[in-house]
Image: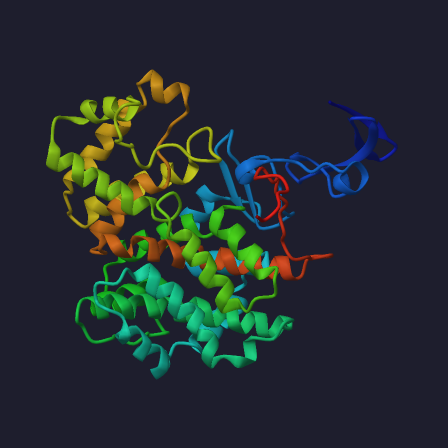
Amino acid sequence: MGALKLHERKELQVAELTVADTRITLPIFYGTEGEKALDISKLRSETGFVTLDPAYMNTASCTSEITYLDGENGILRYRGYPIEQVAEKACFLEVSYLLLHGELPTAVQFEAFRSELRDHATISPFCQNMIRSFPTHAHPMGALAAITAALSAENAAYLAQDLPQSQRQEVTAQLMQQLKSVAAYFYRHMNGLTFVESNPRLDYCEDFLTMLFGACPTAEAVRALNVLLILHADHEQNCSTSTVRLVGSSKANPYATISAGISALWGPLHGGANQAVIEMLEAIRKEGGGVKKFIEKAKSKKDAFVLMGFGHRVYKNFDPRAVIIKKACDDVLEKLHVHDPLLDIAKALEAEALQDSYFIERKLYPNVDFYSGIIYKALGIPVTMFTVLFALGRLPGWLAQWQEMLTASGMKIGRPRQIYVGSGKRDWK
């Protein structure tokens, strides 16, 4: 049906593709790290064919300068900086600035960035009343998505089809600051507590923990939260980031765009996975029988049990974030003098899986979700808030991707094709 040949023409590398009786030339595109892509933008117009790629396993939807991910070798870099260095040396707001602006901030730039956020520290009465209108048993991710979209009702200045750069920067600062407050306020609402206003003089994570619990957190808790948010800050074209780009490509306002990302993140196969891990560990603890029993259940095709927190869509080696977060988990539990039996179960599961041929052959290693929930739990954050914390961490990445997409040359609305497999033409009787 088709044949593909690669060869070089002067400076331009191309591939020749023969489909049926038609031969076309496809330019080859190389990324910074040697990634290779075939430019198929003219495939349909020249051959009548489209590609079929369920779940976009082999489709690059864009070029990006933000995050590099090599799943085969377990590499993750933000703007060129290895995640191991970023997690060790930076705070979350420094990483946010890096993702949004492309470079690490100078002292002057960092203070200006913090000042931009401080300008949006106050939550409006409209927003506070909306938070109070939710049932206290409502899931906070649903509330976060709804309230984010509702912010458009009182921010008409940011709803224009083509926002200038200055307004994109303003709305970015507003969302970074106010979604943190919305998350903290909703936690207080769920627990029947009065709201604690943001103190913009504090570090982002210190302020958030103070707003949650009404007391100054320990330095260990602040550092742990910084690491967690940094590790979640961006992750290339995952489900929620792709959603943000797709919705944003319609020129939807930034509130609707980010709300869509929050909804995509909510799913248990994405941001909700860390909640699912804790629920799984709790179920193992209650049922008992040892971890080997559950390893065998996970391997059995006849058993519905799923070992959450193992494997990743992109990483075919260790998730580099999981290595960092496992150490952070050990450190924070030791420094906070917390003994969590779930950590013992998690470590036993990991040790058992890493010597089991079933998991080795399938390259099913612990991912970032496997230990993150244990840290959140040690910090006193309830399970239903885990994915909200993921959303706060991913927010600067979403905003950076949204801005990059809007300013890209030749930006168009996203519109995938499909292959229709329904009934052929038939007449109505």
